Length: 398
Image 1: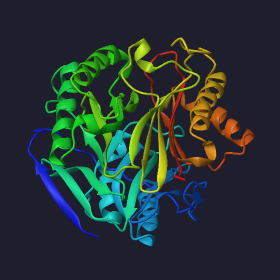
Image 2 (image 1 turned 180 degrees about the horizontal axis):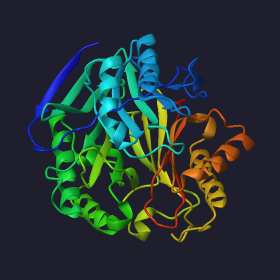
Image 3 (image 1 turned 30 degrees about the vertical axis):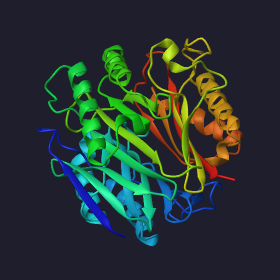
């Protein structure tokens, strides 16, 4: 495997943080396999490279070093390289987490997003998710000496996975910081010969999101208004509360795609049970589908208990909000001839850490105990939303 590097020089004062993830190889489109250590891995694409996603949800009381040791073992067994890591965990565990990543994984030469995103059981980490690949040449994108992106090809498209992107000056107003973060995102994309118009999926982890979500949406909408997305649609997205080690107002992740041949494509997937999010002022699509490398991936945005008219359903009732959310996600999957058995990665966001049992019960009742997800405690974009789920699903392109 060959790695190439590109560097850019913006972002003075911004320090990227460092996290990680695990999972198990399975047949394309089959349910993720259970590793001996309890982590889960799902195969994403076939030849010419093996791309997969690893999910390690922390066990009760599990140490930071144990989580990263499990991840390191899974990666070594498959001779795999990390494309991107998302770590959900306490900010107080960040310094130790960086040390343990270096101890178990060596030099951190991939993009990392560390957000709090706290655990629901008091453990230092909620879990880690790793996008990884074996048998492919990679290009890394660097900012101020830190890696913020990975570029690879899967035979049908070029992909750029970005993470850990923040503002240039965390002392500015939150809206200004959000605008700077978007500018830095575009700069990083440009270093890899991508543009904002290639972006299919975004993640926004915002400090104290309920205090300024309106301002954030105005900044996002303004940046998107200047962009003609190649898909003709806004990116899929997650926007939840997430504090970061730099103390910045927000941190951004993104997935950009450039199809290389005729069959490869990226397209919006609507929600059969919800209105488009822009109808109530949020600039994102409900889901996007990427067809490339012999697979169809459906990247489902953060989804919550929202009615077709845009209002919150079941305020104050977490159990009903979870049931409603899972029904909405199931409808999106069915529209693309998939179901929850095709989910390879998910994050479940809970406003109240004590509510995780409602999702555990729903998964048990529906025979989905093996679904790979990390439960995270944080605020969602509305004060009356108690639960949100994002999910990636994959099946063979037949």
